[in-house]
Length: 151
Ligand code: FES
Image (cartoon, rainbow, N blue to C red; front, side, top):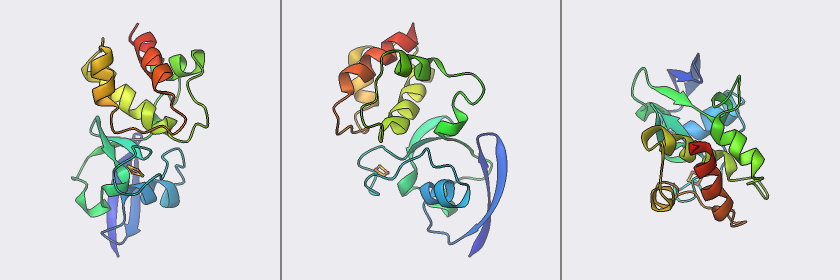
């Protein structure tokens, strides 16, 4: 066991964990942030996507000990915490989710995309979200919602 400091959604947490515990489990089990989902555990589905210093990252494959010091981690709970993010508003307006399980990961990837590419093409969207799988096949609505959020 070792002690780690993690900055999540602008709050600082001290956690004691084994060095190889994935961030996903720190978020869900230690911090009670259940919006980040477990899908595959091998960085193949995107359900566990969070932002590490603004970049989308698969938290199931990020060991707590591998997180660079002073990193800022953002989860779905930190997106639109006070006012809904335009991506979240578009998701609601177009009723994107079906079962909903993958959607927090989809939204995290969409938010990261729009921060770097404010007016993405369909190709940009497909490429940025290629690692976010949806068993319900909501891809078409996801694309439309990202265009709507881009305004
Ligand atoms: Fe991390 Fe699938 S649970 S990518």
